[in-house]
Length: 380
Image (cartoon, rainbow, N blue to C red; front, side):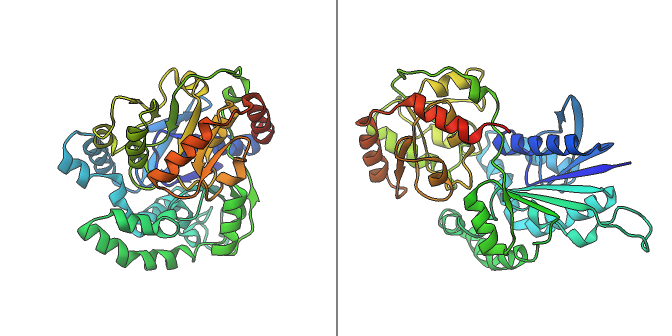
């Protein structure tokens, strides 16, 4: 029996999961696997389907604890939400990776596909074999798709330290150097792909590994929608609603002052808290509303302050001919130029307001933006 083990940091509905599914589909096309299982730290869903086939998800957390964790993290009880916030798992990542490594070894796969934006990269590679005969032991092939190096212990560490409080801050400060050293140990893979030229450069600088750039696939719908030449007067922000890194709280506070219509598409652990900050000019939709494409393509522009290692929502917006106001770091400059958006230098209210003022004074050729983006991201 030919087995494929897919390894992903955390299973939750969203763009990262869709990219992971696409990677699995590619492996199914290139190799005829008899059995596929998914291994992850924590899952918000029991299973998902690929090509109408249900795929089993195996978590590092025991099944009952995973379910308990999931239920309490979504309850509107502040104390429980704080305790059972998935972000608290950060302090247990080494243990989680060892547990996953043991479960993968027990599964005994022929091929391991790792999709990593946080921790999946660091499974114990030396613990696998594809047969029970120790003399004829054969290691499985391992493919790594690196969305980014472990951001929370590198590029985002300073922001985490600023926003973590009390005991969490002290623990994070203590474990970060240990996690950085551990992260550098895992560099051996049969194939390595990165999601952007920027991530490719980081992989070389941090891990000294060579990789090929493979942009994430975009849903074909973004290539077929008609262009809206005259947009409506509102801005759209599509992302997970969290304060960490995404800076949704800063965007809300700034647009409270600007008093310009803003639609936020998404959900997340800080959703209820951030909704209370918003004034009447700001509205929220749930993650992936039925009319999401219509909302995005009719927007005058989109905004995001994330340090993007690729920027899937950026690519989607550009393909829908929407100019963007984005943060001028990481892979964003790889996707956005002076004709398709405005890049702000700092995450401050002043920079956002200045960028907004500059943006609304500039007329842009939305059709040209869409055509250029579709040439870049068309599926080959």
